[in-house]
Length: 380
Figure 1 (cartoon, one colour):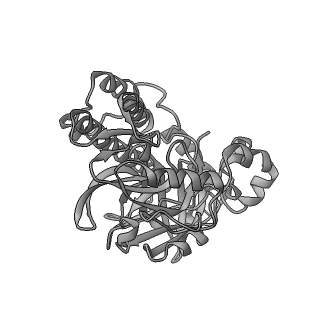
Figure 2 (cartoon, one colour; figure 1 turned 135 degrees about the vertical axis):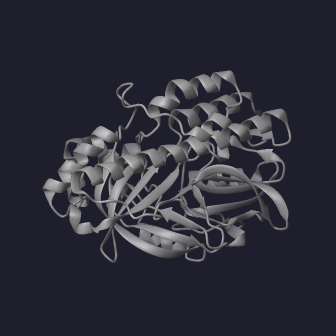
């Protein structure tokens, strides 16, 4: 940041931001109706608004400050087994094979594999017929699918030796369609961001579609958790721990009470961290992850980072990482080695060190559990 920060901006830096990141943050803080901005330590450049940003407005909705993967988040569950279940290559490869079959990365292969939307979706709807058609076309065949990029399914070892599963995914094609639909019809702020009056028909429609997308993203994670739990049970006779499942998301807009008034809080790559609220903060596919509890820090808009955050853009990361180097960085972690060339942009070196991110936000969250990766399943 510059030496003179905008008065409505607070940051928890992991490192001094690059110039393009700094300019994007300052632009956001100058935007019409923006009351407060909190920047998380995993901040990095993205279209329009940086990932790792939290924004409070009085009466305006900013779709760019939510992004397209609406409701993207994390889910976790424990197993009635120790991490030594995946100590052998045989067990790990059998599990990877079942994950490839049961948790597609793009869409289900045929009608027999398609999962129905949960019953409570019968009482939810999207705001336009076009979006409803997309939900019927893509939403059904993508429910229970992982997606690509930084989305993953990972088996992990807790410090006490217990086995955990973590899933990172979101609303897939539906969320992207919702963003595109509303941005196309939105007005513009003086800084060029899309804006919608919250107290308008368009605003109510956007909020309705955000709520639908968040619910879909949560159902998507739950479907993948269920599929992976069934795979472990069928392969090894091991069940999940009853009551251990929990879920959180980090791309949304909600009305919340801050600084004595109700405001619209937008989180893009940032997690709600109210006092006592549980959350999940992953590292890279070669680094530790954390289960945390929020501290409710007011100046962060009761938020925290959503992960480690990228240190290198995808193209640069891929060009700097050979397949041999990726294998070195992932030594001791099971993954589909046939995909090594395609995973170079997701190498651990492409991300910030999660330990430094957690230190930078120690007044935002309290660590409940540290986990290390055992087996990583990703799409490309």
